[in-house]
Image (cartoon, rainbow, N blue to C red):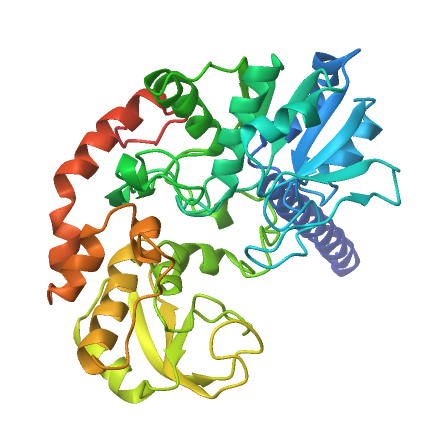
Length: 432
């Protein structure tokens, strides 16, 4: 009897061991599947094209891209499209170049890609009329670039110029959509006034517009082009699958690649709509450091004092730490700089534009004789970046950052109403 009980005991033990081992394998498989699912959760416009390469059969394709045009497996769009049999014959790049090597404002050179032998041509600094002959030897144009969600970041202006040139050249344009890394729900900042239209802001949209490049292309083509008498382009937006407006970039499962040399992380993109405005002053915006747009300062700033003033404001989702740094290039190159580091604690409530204006407001208050606006002839650079002279004037008048943000509520609501007509993606439980 004892022998039978022992046999049964060992048999039951074996069953339990096998059961839990199998369960463990199931859990492991589910974990791997979940990780894989996360990585491929959002399918970009590029993914859709690669699954349906026949849409370009027999066409010579001109690809507008940079290092951000990649798959979830880090394969560049040029290589992936060629692998799928899509005949890419020309490659064009925006500011910073196809390879993303040039600093802001520098003109990329014309190169030959050593892997494919294709020419890598520069669109930066060129007007639509200059682009038309560059598109002569292609049948269709494809735009695949990750934007950062801020109006004065120039990739959407390049897209608008490409649209205009493609319309003149009678070439269809396919925009391969990608997520807005700031999400697609919140819309903030002043709306550009048409008299301040420039390459860092072509059309009357909000500074933080909350739209994807595909949505912006549709808005430009259907609203702003007809209003300004421009010919509409034969536009095809290749929509994403699986993206909803309220998603943070980290929820998409997509890798982050620097869109430009001073945009290293998603956090950089989060602060950029506000701290990017520091470019319009004599403060360093952190270029020449490993934390551009998060480190802010000048040789005349006492970091502890500025940090105390800013933390006293209790701005949403952010804290400030006194910081000291020496930029290796750009403003105050080689000089010891005092200032603050911006620490985003809650991206959901963080208001980057309020934060950027608060920094400028406090520095001007603490150091009135040393703070200065960056002049670029007429108008001031701040007026170009904000799209209005009112923000600079309000700061000069001693208005608080909160008062300034409140002042553009009416124009922002009008833009939101217009924007709502051109949104392509839902927000779960949130109206457009």
